[in-house]
Length: 84
Image (cartoon, rainbow, N blue to C red):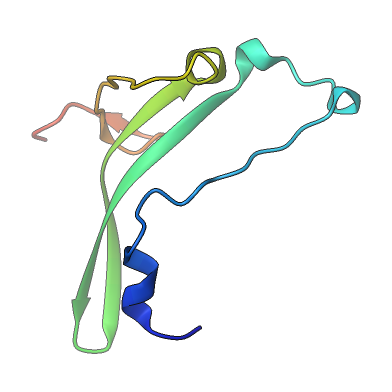
């Protein structure tokens, strides 16, 4: 894989999602979920903590441009108020 730091040279690497008409996907029901994860390494053990998440509906994402997303606490499975 080469130099580990090379992964951070371009933080805006493209992400590609693909679907076809055969998927019968209802685009109004599709959302992107961004989970903010904190990784803590203590000795040889690494733990991951979800420290917030945001949701972006596909139709909003397809409009392009910047998006201001609300950061939620907890995880997408167990929503919490920030600060708990």
